[in-house]
Length: 491
Ligand code: NAD
Image 1 (cartoon, protein in one colour):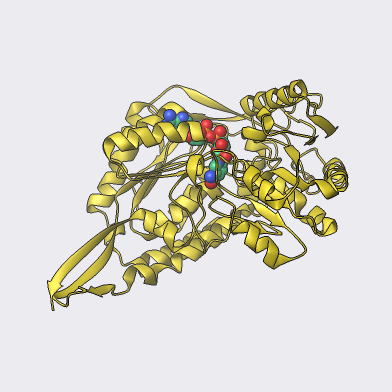
Image 2 (cartoon, protein in one colour; image 1 turned 90 degrees about the vertical axis):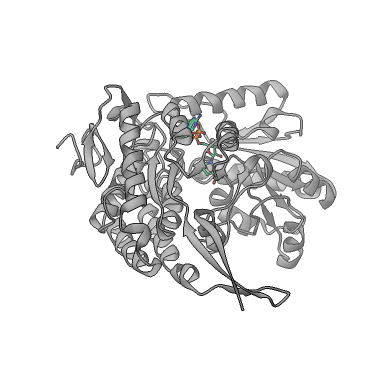
C-alpha cells in the first residue's frame, strides 16, 4: 500500500495512513506534521490516520480553488457541459461502491446495510443535479411591470465554496453540497469531520477520474480549528456546513461579520406523532428507519415519540419489542441493524444523557447500558414516561435512544412537537393519511413525513430555528450556490 493517493485492497483489515491532501488535481504531501487518528468504533482499533492540515496546506488548497475559479475552464463551461462531467463522476462513484461502504463502516461504525447504499445515493444526487442544467441555462427574461423594458436574470457561480461535513453520513453530506456547487460552476475545498476523513478520498478520486479539472475539487483533512480557518479564509466566497447547532452558531457569527453567504444544516429533536388510529403493525415496520436510523445518529429522525394516552401501553410495548429484537453487533455483518456509537466523545455524551434520564425518573423499558468493550456499543434504549422538562426530552441525544411521552388531545401533541428550539423533521402516523397530512401541516419544521420519512433529492430539505439556515436538495438547494444578477434593458 502506498502512503499517498491509493488505498488498501483489503478494506476490512488493512491499515490506511495517507500523508497527503488533494490539492490542484493531485495528492500533495502535507506540510504539517500533526496527524489525526481514525479508530474503528466497533473494535477500538486505530486502523488509519490522516494529516491535520497546517496553515500552509489550507492556503495551498484555497489558492488552487481560487485559481481554478478565476482563470480555469470550469466556471466558463456551459452548465450542460458540466452536467456531462457530473454524470461521469456519478459512474465513477458507483464503481467504488464497495470501497466507499467498507471505509465508511470502519470509520464510524454505520452498518453495511446502511453504507452499502452510499455510492448509489451519491450517484443519484450527482445525476439529479446534472438534470438541473437547463434551469441554469434557460433564458429567464422578466418584463418590467410598467412596460419600460425587461430584465435578464442570470445565475452566476458564487466562487470558492468551503464545504464542511460531520461524521454521521460522511459521503452523502459532502456530495449534497458538492453536486449543486459544481453544477453551478463553483470550485470547492472540502473538509470532512475528524473521525471520518478517509471515505471521502474515494469520492475525490472519482471526481479526478471523471475529468473534473485541477483545482475545482480540493480536499484537506483537519479538526475544528481547520474548519474555523476555512470559514474565515479570504479566498472563500461561500460556506456550506452540516454539523451541530453549537458550531453552526459560531460559523454564522463569523459569516455575519464577513457578510459571507452561508448555509447551515444543524441539529434536530424531531417528533413522531402517533394519532389514536395508528396502525401499529405498519408503524413497527418503518420504526427503526424513521426513528433510529444509523444507530440513532441521523439528524432528521423522530426520536421523540408522542403517544396518545388511549393507546399508550400498546405503543410502548410495540416499540420496546421492535427495538429489543433488532440485531446489534458487527457493522460489517449485513444482518446488523444497530452498530456502535461512532466515536468516544459521542459515546460519553449518550451515556451522560442516559444517566440524566435515570436521575430524572424516566422508565427504561429496554437497553440503557453500554455493552462490554472494546467497541463503543450502547444497547438500544427506550425511555417511557418521559416528561417535557427532562433533559432527554429537550436535547439532541444522537445515539440509539428514543423517548416516549403521552399526550391527551392532538393539539397537545402538536404543542409538544413544536416546543423545542429545533425544527428539522417529524412524522405523523395515522391510518387516515388525510388526517395525518393535516397534522403534518401544523408541525413547525422544514420537512415532515406522513407514515414514513425519506429525503427526496427533488424537494428542499432544511431546518428552521436552531436547526439551520437555507436548504439542500431541489432547485432551491442549487440556488444556494448561485449569485443572481439582473441585466436590465429597454424594450
Ligand atoms: P460538529 O459541529 O462537531 O462538526 C461538524 C464539522 O465542523 C466537522 O468537520 C468539524 O471538524 C467542524 N468544526 C468544528 N468546529 C468548527 C468551527 N469552529 N468552525 C468550523 N468548522 C468546525 O458536528 P458533528 O458532531 O460532526 O455532527 C453531528 C451534528 O451534526 C449533530 O448535531 C447532527 O444533528 C448534525 N447534523 C445535521 C444534519 C442536517 O442536515 N441538518 C445532518 C447530519 C448531521
